[in-house]
Image (cartoon, rainbow, N blue to C red; front, top):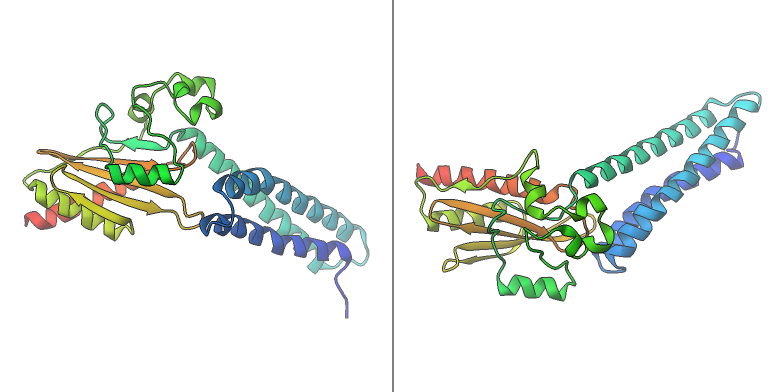
Length: 270
């Protein structure tokens, strides 16, 4: 019976360890074993490429040794090639995420950039307790707002939230109330948030707002969401508590919430 050579064993061991490492980085952040800076920045952004590089190097060496040694064993070649293919996919995914972050440089998105919906005192207190990013003015250049003072590019520093959102190709839009009442609008938004899995949903009829918290699956990142129901339209805002780029999550969430709310309002009007 042929046993695996040492180089193939190393490849298999690393191939088994790498996905566990990435999962541990995410779930460790989610359950609070370490901070998001350690789990995402240190383990994933900085440590991930190093670990993938080691796996790629081990797989390349294993491939060469499997090709050189006679007689060639197809199984060893397959192990090395599959590992190299997986490393290539992983690096491609990370490159894609980097490109997505560059295309979505902010983490605060609203449908009204002149007068974005505001959060309640309870939400602001929760953000402060969590050490969340401060909410910046939509007209102020990002270079004057944390966390972009130290982590944003010079090109980004002169732009404001309003300018960036206005230039978005899939910019979220307000939802006209049509023939629905404000009360129906509030109820529809709350129901849509619940259907999307948001938690801590709160309605304030006097202020005309509905708030909720979205939590990401892997890292447990929390984003605060608010909808302002006016006399003629509903405006939405979604803001991440941590990080610089939201990878487009907030705009996507607003568009989803808008679509669901619109459908519920249409049902209520019939």
